[in-house]
Every structure is written in C-alpha cells, then in structure tokens.
Amino acid sequence: MSTDLHHTPEHDATERPAPEPASVTASPRAAVLHDLVIDWFGAHARDLPWRRPDAGAWSVMVSEFMLQQTPVARVLPVHEQWLARWPRPADLAAESPGEAVRAWGRLGYPRRALRLHAAAGAIAQRHGGEVPHEHAELLALPGVGEYTAAAVASFAYGRRHTVLDTNVRRVFARVVTGVAHPPNATTAAERRTAASLLPADEATAARWAAATMELGALVCTARSPQCGQCPVAALCAWRLAGSPPHEGPPRRGQTYAGTDRQVRGRLLAVLRASPGPVPQAALDAVWHEPVQRARALDGLVEDGLVEPLAHGVYRLPA
DNA sequence: AAAACGTGGCT
DNA sequence: TAGCCAAGTTT
Image (cartoon, rainbow, N blue to C red; front, side, top):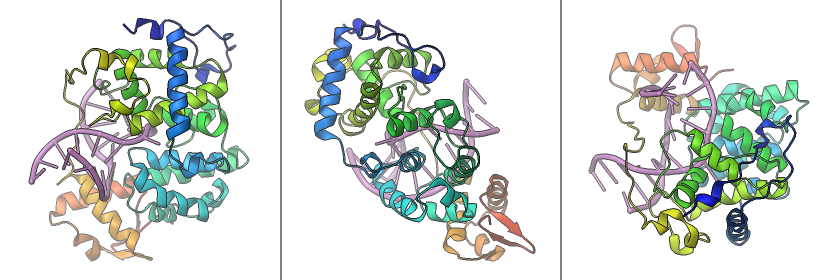
C-alpha cells in the first residue's frame, strides 16, 4: 500500500543546530508525491497578499496570527488594514494594545490581537525590529506555537520545517494513513509522517509546506473533498481503501450559545465600538444574567483585554 | 491532557 | 435547523 511513502525519516530543521543529514535518498513515491502536489500548487495556488513576492515576513506573521482558527475570506480585509496602518512590527508596538484589539474587529479570539501586539514589542526590542528567522526565536514570541513558528520560518524565509496544520494533517491522514480525518490532537506518528515526507532540499521543503496546506484548503477539504480535482488521487491510501468513513471518537465540537465566550464577545464588541471609556450600564445591557456577566467581564480584565477605570467605567487597554 | 478561547458561513 | 468547520495557543 503506502508503506514506502514513509520509510526514510529525515530530520526537521526544527533541530537546526544539529548537523543536517546529507540529503537522504527519498523514496521514489515520495518524490512523485512532491512533484505532483508542487506542480498542482503552481497551477492552482490562490493569490494571497501574504504570498506575493513583495510580502515581507511581518505580513506573513500577521496573516498567520489572523488565520489561527479563522477562514481566509474573513482575514483578507483586516490583514490589509493592519499592514497599511502598521507596516512594521515597531509601528504596532508603538500603539496601545487596545488599538490592536479594536482593529482586530470581529475576527474572533481577540487574545490573538493582544499577543500579536506583544510579539511586535518583543521583535522591536529583542530583534532589532525584524521578524526572527530561527524557529526557536519565533517560538519564544507570545502567541507563536509550534505551527506558527514553522509557518513563518518556512513561508517568510524559505526554511525547512514540518508545517503541520489542520489542512496538512488531513491530507496526510488520507493520502498516507488512509483514514478520513486526523486524530483530534496531533500525535507523534503524524509528526513522523510529516518529517519523513519533508523534502531534503530547503526551497523544495518550503514549497511543499505551502502546497500541501493549499491542497488541504482547496481540494482535500473536511466536508466534501474534491477528489476529482486532486493531483494525488491515484495514490491516495484513503481512496484506494474505498474512502471509508470516519471511525472512533466524534470530532471536536464546540458549544457557543450561552457560554462565557459569547458574553465576552458581546462585552468586547461594545468596548470596540466606543472610542472612549464605557459606563457599566452599557455593558450590563448585553447580558441578562448578572453572575455570568460579571464573570465574563472579570475574565476580560484578567486577560488584559479590558481595563477597569475608577467608578464602574471600562475601556480597551491603553 | 482536557478545556477555554470568537465569529460567521455552509450544509 | 443544528452542527460542523476554519492556517492554533495557552493553561
């Protein structure tokens, strides 16, 4: 079946200080896979602002923060506004965190705005204003986890990293493992698969990362995969197995209505809409239940998303 | 390691 | 309609 797709483990550049193994001979099937997906990418990749030749590392980094759990279509306009307003990390760092939260708009998970603002500050202070090249340095920035560090290093600087996001995980689950969906949490086996398939050549690896992600986003989608358009349908383990349905525990579901998250969202929406401080009464109006409302507001203050002023007045953090 | 953390479009 | 899903990170 697909066993020879992953018989030549290579090292992820995540372990960069260690000597890079001389180009291990990739299996012929892996090489074919690389070519098919990368060629497909060349013909079908979307023209996204953060992928253009003139896009800098900062543009890439802003996009990666915004794209965490948020669809491309919603990110596009906000990303454009951010880059126009804050063309460099130092520009954002010079603003108040509250302005970052306000400009985040309705992208969701506004703590990302706070973390991106803090990351910009760290970049301005510790990295001379330039987005760092090293995976470890990126990982040390607030809001940057394993995925985002690899994505920025790979997409912005062409470095060799396993970029394992939900799209890539799904592509590998199907093409390599032969199942409909990846596990709920990333496993060591998935990391091994990704590492074994990572092209030895740095530039090719970066291209492969973007290409597999795009394939998952456009063709090998979660709901209704377009296998008829897939460049690797002929060697996809899942297809060859007859496209069996998902087995095992139900996929991660999220409840929202009635949760603290919903209340937080409403409270913050009021704060964002107001240019200045907001009286308690305006916040009280968003949710009927006082205990939950107070808990949500406390949480926002705790997170640094809201700043309490004297006598029951609140605002976005200055 | 499980759960919290927003928002909106699609089926 | 109700649930699924979207380039995850943090605690």
